Amino acid sequence: MFLSNAVRDVRLLKGMTQRDVSEGNISQGTYSKFEKGTADIPTQALIGILNNLNIDLEEVLFIANGYSYTEEEKLYREFFRFSVTNTNSLEEFIYKCEKYLEVRNESTIAFLHQISEFLLEAFRNEDIYFNKSQALHFLDFFSNKEQLFIKDLYIINAIFFLFPVDVAHLTIEYVEKSLKKYKDFQSINRIEVNFRLNYSLMLIKDKLEDKALQQLDLLIPKVKSFKMHYQMAIVYIRKGICLYNLNQKEEGADYIQRGLLILETIEEHELYSHMQKEIKKYRLSNS
Image (cartoon, rainbow, N blue to C red; front, side, top):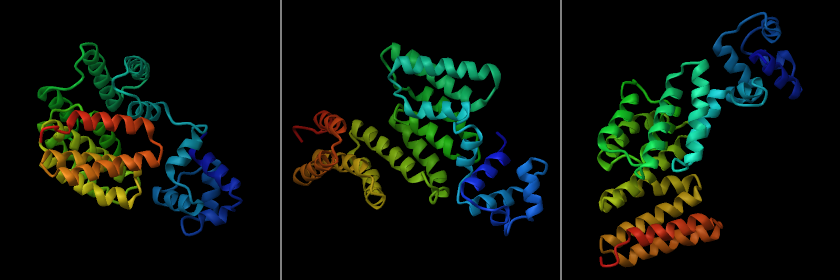
């Protein structure tokens, strides 16, 4: 289906006339030709038409593709979704990338394919974490870009927790510039929270609790504001671990209990169990 056909279908389903959607953007006659596929319209006019329809471009493209994502978009979403420690998922994803790249040479999909092959080999060798050289190699893919876009941020975040802490620090500094530019974009807060949560755990592992606290304290107002309940629980628990290890045991224990209570209340049983293991592993019993 062409984009113009999808726009027409949305208009009809919403019970709107051509005049309703073209008003303030282009003439009704030009819009009619656009729907028929006999005329192109300026991008700004298309944006205005979608605003009149109260629908965004991503949804229209989804409809135009038969209520489905494109093959490229499906690969992106699958990469962000699967566990990097699941060899079956990695093998299947690598195969899908190879089939896609046989038809179209797309650099970002090729990069995801390269990452996945590395992760599969590393997992088979029982060491999925990148050394400094490997992490910098993958980071270099993005460093030549003048700006990181949303998909770039998602990709970096998906592998960020595998970096050594010194490269992670460079990565945070690098992505923060783009995070600030996208501060009002719909999904940016979730991306930033995930980045800082991953980074906080890396710092805790390296016994850099004071630096981890700085990251966690940046997150508290954000997760509260956007009602990110399970993320709030993780922030509280990790803050508690940091405080406990810095000899503020009473306050640390309080934060840990608050975090566990949130997970218990929202019935996140699997995450509750995981965080208990994290507490046992990283809270110093002799601090």
